[in-house]
Length: 58
Image (cartoon, rainbow, N blue to C red; front, side):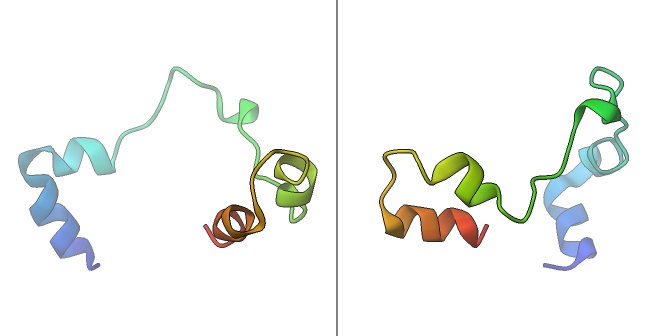
């Protein structure tokens, strides 16, 4: 989807939504998942292999 299309869909709130800077959560509290995220977090859950595959590709 092009940025023009996104701006059109967001309408008059596009500027606010696309240029928002969060002040409630410090960026040091956020971390990217490791490459092994699925194995570390989800593998021992009750999710079947099909669901794990979908999570892996998100």
